[in-house]
Image (cartoon, rainbow, N blue to C red; front, side, top):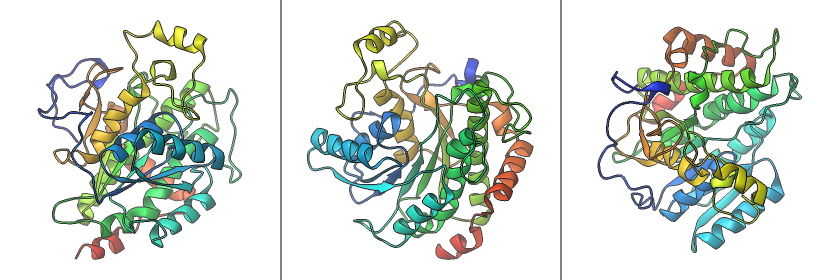
Length: 340
């Protein structure tokens, strides 16, 4: 994790951004392939667009074929010459996760390698009452956290295989500033005893951040050349975001309503900058935590995760509970052998 520094509220580190980083002029990503979950809209789409604009081959994944096709067409229209493919993937469905990962491992995609993955897909507008997936997992936890835990296990080997002397493949977990708004210690990880909309979201993001930090610690211990980074997008809203047909088409009322929040909000294309920097900046190290400079908005800077999600005991407990619920363990031993 980032070295301890004196910070402001919401874990913002009181340090200037590392010099020389321009979100509008990313380091060339030619020859690299990235998978983005939930890429058909919002942060996932704009992160994909920024990566494609820098020359990367991007695998857009999502669970709606028509929405994926619309995002694919929009990206190609906005980034002439973009190299993009689509992949059906519902992170709340373990079978879908396994099938999608098998396609990636089988080299069915254009470049046959995987240099990074963004665990972006998730539920922000949570249901009023507790819902479960077909496998019986609480829906918000399964979508935001557990599905990505399984996907990380499934993709660890292809990530490790793509390591080079000049590049360490990276996974980026999508955190949230909501993790600072209350303790949200995930003891009742599936909210079986008490469910509330806000708690479902905030606790799921504590779990996501704990998994991202714990993943990096375990990757380091195993000597695997893959890094895990956590990034959050601040307060990024659709009404502050450029209109993209089939991807982001806010009504005039939403534009007006979101415009009032301009002092504390930003567009999703700006929120995506933290995610993209966490993925491609060669100066970032595994275990770091990144987000907007002013917590809700601004350029990406290093920050501190909430104490709960950074707690080693919480991290260990969350990891082991996800193993138990998914029946999946990360293949650290096999991945370590890949790199030697």
